[in-house]
Length: 117
Image 1 (cartoon, rainbow, N blue to C red):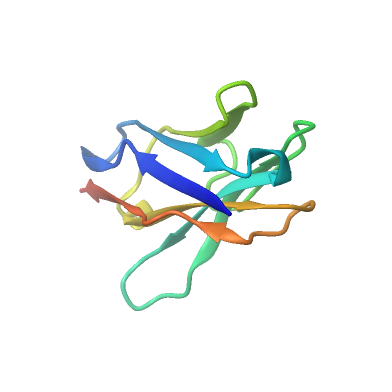
Image 2 (cartoon, rainbow, N blue to C red; image 1 turned 90 degrees about the horizontal axis):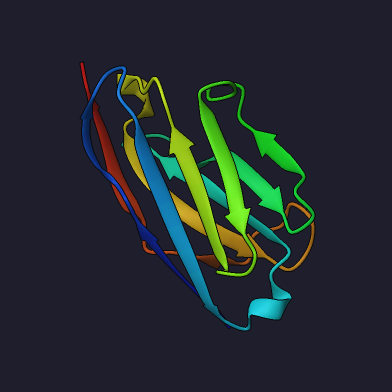
């Protein structure tokens, strides 16, 4: 089992920045992929960004160039640096991890990000 705890959400004005963190504990050796999903009211959960333990990354088109995912394997922590935030980035952001490339088996409780216009 893997436990994921997110932090860093909040309220920010459009154009501002936030940094999300997600710390993993438990069966750490089983983690290969870590990533961030988000879900806005009335919308499906979508992948925002993901990173493997080897450093390969994926981004949603809507955030590419504005968000950066990074990972500290020694601290079992993944980060999401979000710049030039837009109101449409408002959502609950969930941390997730998986045992294989681009798979997601465990989820955090979510952290709210609200971007005001």
